[in-house]
Length: 418
Image (cartoon, rainbow, N blue to C red; front, side):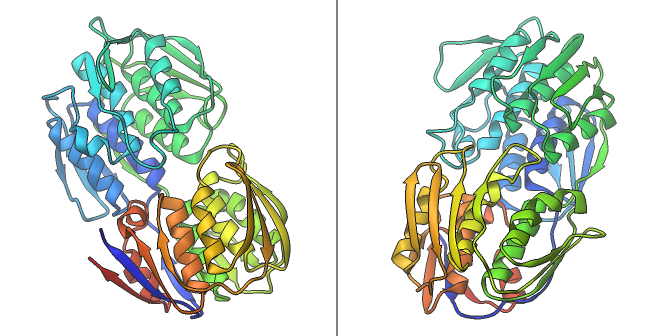
């Protein structure tokens, strides 16, 4: 396991450009499995999760060119297996997105239990039910094993929850199903919209993306396509918080202004000077004040992926802030480590944390238990007095490209070990 050694107390400032949206890249990569023709994806983020899913596709018979760059060329002329590598599946929750394409191309799919953040607490019940609605049958095998010997059939369905990957699983299956599928209570996040647009470029008729009802007309012949991913607004927001917590200024390019509005809203409430015009996200250091309450929500609400970072920002704000992430359990638990850094906070339950600020943080050893809280702990370490050690750094590199290089570019004193 690698470690990130951080000497805190330095003001970070500068300019950065983000690459494509991590949460778009994974479903688009999975969609490439639907066709035997070549697909080309541009502005792909150079992150560990993309490498893992690309490796899974290669294990299923695909050729992938361009890994390590922002342009990938993929072709899966023949799917050679219905069982993605179990060890790699155990590292990536997004591997669940392979179920629909495998059922379409092979008539069966055998997936080990997906890993990623909080694997024991994040079920894929919504995903499996969507596939059952389209005619898949569950086998009594370990993990998730399904067959569709007669192919998938379009269906009308209401999702139990507006799950992003649940919606994407339904979309990927519906693209190759016979007939029309209507998905109600669908997720509306920008990355779901991007998948719909990519499927349309592949010749699938899709309408209603961005709304809670999406209709798909399955295609017998799905063709290859080229697509450029939109910038990662979560990463852009992350860098804005990283700079702000050290009292610095930053300009981030590459993410769309309409996506950044939901990120900027609580930052403005906390006293920061933010602007997000012309796809330029600017954050200027200012005296921070407590937001009172920050609550996550389904899009266009404040995204849960940012809640750990704003919690750390609240430790440096004057007053009391209640942070409420009702979407996911456990995400806030990793932030209990801030108490040992002298933060004044109280974890009420798995969904709520109260923070009193400002307090001067002190460096220490930190455990990056999941991707987003890992980045938040790095932000805390950058603001702290003394030296901190964050492990394993690979957890954060799953979603943030060139992490050490970008921190160094902004003026941080960091070193990667291992």
